[in-house]
Length: 104
Image: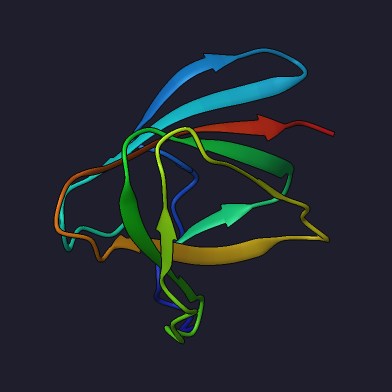
């Protein structure tokens, strides 16, 4: 990752709720759209809304395997330190999920 690469503080498209324990985001991506680089410092889970295909790339642009996910599927990520990446909608339709960050 170059020093000039901006890392967004926004994990999702829209912040829905925040208190001292959790932060909840709505993430929506059109086909081919990316989140841009963002940083996770808290464990989080996300709930997929609708079927779709998502691919993550690390901070250096190296792609991870694309994942097919179904409506209602829940994924949990434990974060050790931080994770900087971007996610790209590589599916044919819109992507949506709700992300819940668990503040430490």
